[in-house]
Length: 326
Image (cartoon, rainbow, N blue to C red; front, side, top):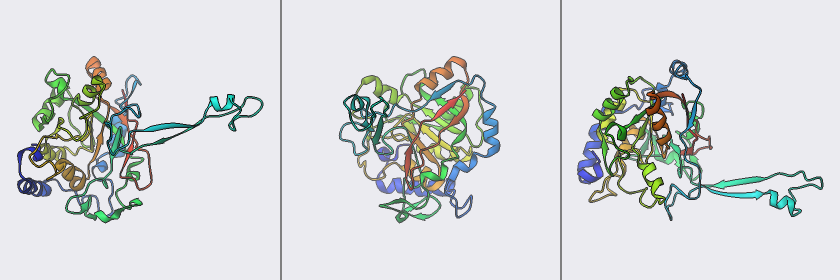
């Protein structure tokens, strides 16, 4: 269910409060824990995942970081702005980057919002009731960044068994309709159709086709903050029971976003439970179309993945170039 579209603020809060004790992981791995469900990815699970590599083929699941998207015009999350500091043109013009013998160099820099393109949300990214994961005060995230639950805590942990769940493929579609809610039943059916079994520590890559749809249009307007397909709120207990380590999707928000009468009432309730209560990192804007095509071609939907975020100190999210190794 998309709570912003189906319920009043009061009703939505009641549902969130009812869901919390069913899935809350506060204290499960100790009072000092800052990585939540990533604890499910053990060294043994990684060794098992390494055995999935059969061909050595590698697919990147990242968008090309570009000022052209995926954030639409005037979005506060600035698309990557790539500029050159020194170039070969400067060298040829006798600039400071060169020497008389023609030796020289080029340098560049990027300015961007850390969550503008393919990225992981850290466990300091979302608050509910002024708390973040493991019952920490939201004021631990200040102007200088996150003092706890920052993205650097998982800099060496995001590798293991990845599973692609191609939900449009399950229905013979290219893309799911806007605001479509992916149910627990569909997740289980996808596992069954792909002939694989859910295992603790899995990272699920949920394809909706939404990113590819907007990319094909050549216009990102409406891609963010609008209705989009994604996981249903009701799928949270299943993710908890299956001991899923993290979820990534080809959408802006992972969860289903609807059009509610009061869209500001409970903003992203799935995030409030998954990140705050469960301690589950969410990956957004992952490019899954090429992976889906490859999996459909060889019939193999499980793979070794490596998706370490860039370890920006005290960041609440970070860009990533996720790799699926088959």
